[in-house]
Length: 378
Image 1 (cartoon, one colour):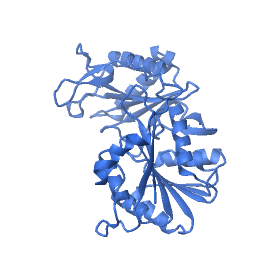
Image 2 (image 1 turned 60 degrees about the vertical axis):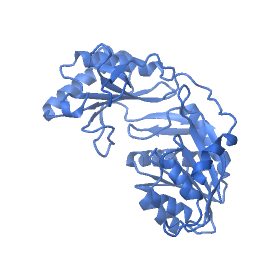
Image 3 (image 1 turned 90 degrees about the vertical axis):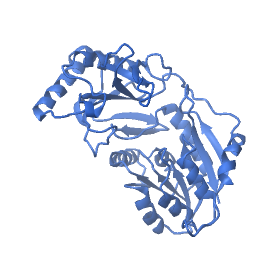
Image 4 (image 1 turned 135 degrees about the vertical axis):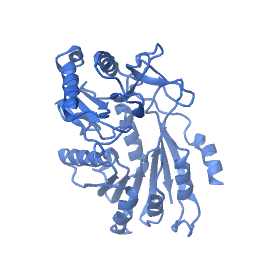
């Protein structure tokens, strides 16, 4: 019953969606693919049109997109120039050979720019890899790409799509290892592997919305699950008695710890690992009489069932905020499990949560996507 009615009810919770102060060129991070253009040139950098199923994939420029900043378009343009003069081919499909892959660009409000180039090594020796790394570095420091004025350039040898630093380390070819951002009065460290909301102004509104709905105060423990760089935890840390963050990506946890220390936030504790393994142990150590507010911001895969179990069965948690840009699919399963009657077969033993409010925050202008903050209470 709940699964059939929750999305019918959601529109009544939010008659409008707040707009951001910046709606054009707002992306601070973009990842661009390499593939053939409509005219057949395989050394083209941009975004895909078409589908793999229909076999009509082409790569088109990003310059017409309103959400892409000029700096990103500039770096894309020069990476394409580099590819077209390179002696090796791009990697369009891993099993078909080739080397040059995606380009990721991260910028901050001060205009500092980090670029990450992925490269499939195939059967190349370390000596041959070094030659291509030097060629790439020289292009962006001494060659035509120097006009991009990159703050840092990273190189990642990748044999899979979107692998982490732990799977394949990022290699700094030149420049600073990190860039920094100012957000809600905090100085934030951003590394190449860490997740940061792609719209900085929108992120500030998102975190303010979470703070208002959570009603965190000095007697509250804030539990930030899937915390990324810990921005929700850090932005609310000074209000709470204690903040506990859990994140799978180790580099993101290191960034969160650095940011907490640099900004003098002493009551934040971050744990690296799978939430379904760490969360039950953390909750066991908390006293039931201490009010705990849980915030979850999972990927599109939703929360692991054991995480739902741990939250649902913790008597101290009476307020839950679920942040999602895809509140359907696996997230729907999570909503049902949080709100269904006690079920011993699924080990959901405590009282169910009730959906009280849903607030959209438009982090992605010019797209059909929206971040949604759902407030559940018992």
